Length: 552
Image (cartoon, rainbow, N blue to C red; front, side, top):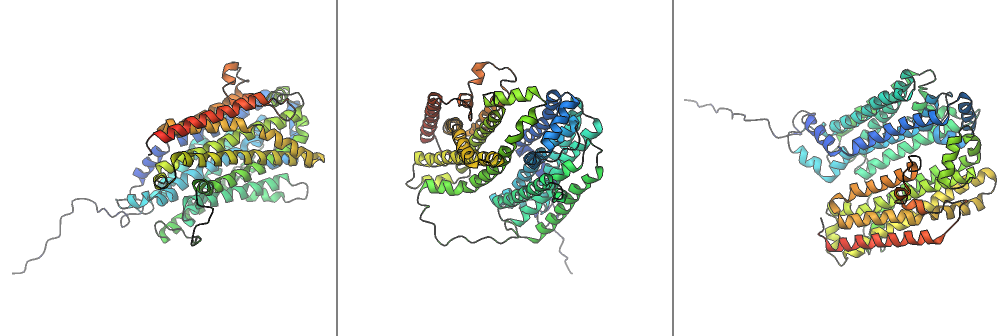
């Protein structure tokens, strides 16, 4: 008698995610991605939506008459530096001015949001080893990429939907508002495809973000060169940039709806290429070859200070390049700022308030230096919070297990923050001074004057860094959110405090309120000294807390 073996009964799906369907588990990973980004995503969407909507409302109040808007169009359209920064002016309506003022920059912010989302949930998780753990369950090979794409697409759709609802509330035409909102959302979708491809090419999250930032920088330069080119120049370069497609849609001057197909085509091509590349490469590896490191460490890596600098040098270089570029163009625009603001008495008064003196050019330059100080404070905050990143990732314990103490470890990152903030401020002053000086024929004196004006912001920036260090030492679990909240409140007070008629007690909370308004203002050493002492006090409290508390 022949006995046939019976097949084993199946009690559930096989736990071989890579052998299963390619999209298995996409829903669960998407929900996880939204949960992880539950704070970041609303913040980005809110920032971009409010930025565009409030700009439309403000322009309506600042330029209420057609004559005032026509003067702005003549001044702004004839200034190559402003076209380089903001783009071309297509019309004199409030909607056209809104597109000119923040269309390109809203698209840049949307692209940055998209890059961070896609890279974080693909290459970032893969580099950290999370995708290998997730992939051991019933999760398909393409599920993580799909979840990341769904998250990024949803965020850009949310921005477009909110702008469609809020822009008409400011009095802008509905059709133009819809075209403008779709153009901003579609630009973000284009960079969704670009980021998806970059995540497959690079072997690490930093490399993927570097590729994306390189593409974003090239897109800005192509658009800027095309927009600022004069008659007979290469104005066609604007058509080669996803950022240029926002203004080329002409939302409030006869919308070109067909232009929206261009970013959608980039999204489709990028997503298709990303899926194809993802199926070909090994988990944890990129398609671009890794550059081998040196066989032995440099003699400069003998202490925590050099290690901290090496860890943060790429970020500092990126900040420095961005600051040099933006402030050079902004400084070049100072020559025609008087005619640009001539049609709006309210805007002239606001720049004078920010600058602290009646001379409109000095007021504009002083307002630029305030923005440089706030930017330096943002960099210093991120540099200090690297301490917490090293701690939560488990990289601090091996370092502290050696002869390196906690105080020395904390001081190394504090030194990088201080030096980095000083470098960024000097770069901002030099760039703005050269940009303005070359336009008026005296680059040397203007550069020296603006470097001094920028460095006056350093003590206030260091106070913010000291607060961040105190939070790391005393409230490690909440230090990241608290530090960025403090910086956000300072930015709000400095930019909108007087407009909202806040009391002087609230205005004095910001350290930048006590900084001399340079160039053109009077210099007093007393407030700068008190700011330096406050920065030292906060830093000492943070180092003391870091020394006493548990690590991790």
